[in-house]
Image (cartoon, rainbow, N blue to C red):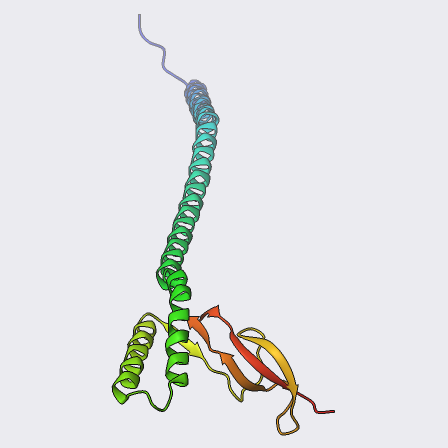
Length: 213
């Protein structure tokens, strides 16, 4: 059977059908692309939300641990500094005590030796004119040796004649009016005083002037 020839109307209808099919396919493809993009964005958002919910607590926990470690380190450093300072103070006190013991270990011995020095000085002062020069020289040399030994170990004599009275190192035995001297001046030294490395071992016994009536 022979195919009927297509009229211009038929061609137009066919063209409209093809355009309609193309438009429908384009809409379906666009809808599928939008659907795929939406699902992909949702998955990405879900993954970020999931990662955020997992990472934040871990970061907070790590930050807390770091803070605790820093605090522990600061406390340990403070304790170490305190211990070092305490050790230094203990060492300094021990050194001071040792130095003090070394300087003043002879204090009792010096006190016992001073009366011997006093006796030699009095003997030298009261020797009669008739005493031999050899005898006098022997006593003088013995006294000098005693004083040299005392000086070697830090012993100093106190002879405050003519100086103002100092109650820290002088002991007033009596007070005598004297118009030629200022009040509270040492007129005479009855017994010399002594220091051991700056510490008073025995005060000087003195006579002190006072204002004349």
